[in-house]
Image 1 (cartoon, one colour):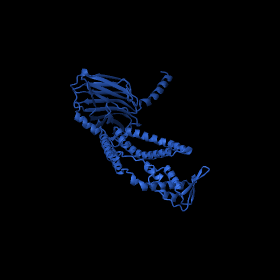
Image 2 (cartoon, rainbow, N blue to C red):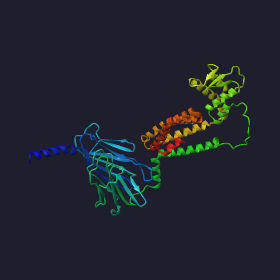
Image 3 (cartoon, rainbow, N blue to C red):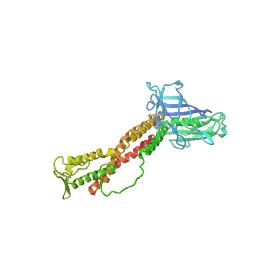
Length: 486
């Protein structure tokens, strides 16, 4: 062999060495026993090549515990009798709850593995993994999972069905590739013992996996009873059930409260009046009619004060000036005394311009508080106690829905969103009221411009509210969101 050929072979060997030594799963095999009581025993044999990069002390295996069935119901499964071996000897391991399952960490956390090949054996029992349909029963099983970051040279599985299942009526399907893929890179057959055998015919890249389907006729595996399904549903969806029950109670309570104190009374005989009622100012009548105070009530009070000889309104080239009339003896309506005192606290003349906005603002506030003190308790029945009790029911419902969730950690994002959305919603409510008031009082170019500005300012906050509700619905449930909105 020439020197050139030997050099090329050496270079090729050196180039292939890192690839040959890369961390990988050399073989992943699952041996699955399906029992007639619908439970299963799974033994996974995983041979890996460790190089001290990702595989340092051992490996971990993710097992899903929560999924949705064919009609969207939440299903929670359990894994018990977990055993772990490495090269035939017991291996330390522990498990940690994940968002939708458990992660089994395999290996001694105080010891690093030497480079080389290791065979791990993971065994466990599980139930509620079978699908029961009208014409058949089936096992759909993700053999390898799709969370491995390194390749799998070969994946295989053997499924042992109850002895009563006729092999001739068993159908086999499988899929390879990433999540949701329908790749057909596999071989499948029944051996002489009617055990289903599956094997990939190409290596799987990181993130790819092997899923299998075994279908057999009904009558060989005990199907869960209606009572058992009912119990499972309540156990799996305790938070949802609590939320739905609380929502029903809340709606019934609001219906009862509305029937008792919220229903409008029967209209009586309407007698027209052609003069304002005695003792009421225009501002107070507007306040009572709207059950709220606004700038127009302030304007009505100023005009009424001028009509009754307490002040004069001057138009100075488009700028308005208020001038107090000393010694005026006209009767003051409710709230007008406070308005006069605050308006002319620093003199008998006030220009309605930006430089005096602090005094004008404090005057408006004082007038509104005075009207509130005079009329709110007398004419407004807000039924606060009924509202408070409704809020208490909502809080208890939300707390029960979160705490009764099968995994509180899974509900942590929902709990955070409830707290965040509560504060955000209050801010959105305040902004909404400000936008409404701005458009109610939008007179002239300046008023409309201000209303447009505050509306544009509020729009991102409204968008945040909608996105928060959508995120909460995804993190928790529609029932929880409806409870919050009600």
